[in-house]
Image (cartoon, rainbow, N blue to C red; front, side, top):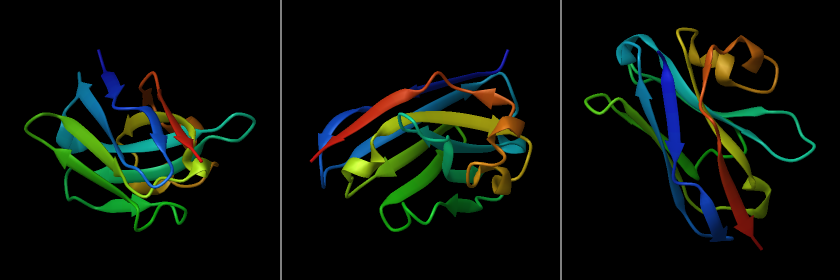
Length: 128
């Protein structure tokens, strides 16, 4: 059974940092792209970042480039999203997702329905 378990969300002041973790199990980690989506109230789910476990390719949405860093620890089957210089507009539920599809499917708001596996989500709230 595939499982993605997120942790690390919370409340932080603008300019602060958080690190999200996504612990994966039930599939061959190296065969998958793993990434993060977020969804704010009343808005579409949008892709934030993705990493290809096999070759380390990474993707970032323009809104988070230079502030967020995605990484993976293949030995622990865990993906991390380090979020720095957080802004109130980063407030959302953040979802870890995984699929054998390439990272391109983790971009924007158009392809997320094709992603096969999802975590339960973790709330990130950035106070101004």
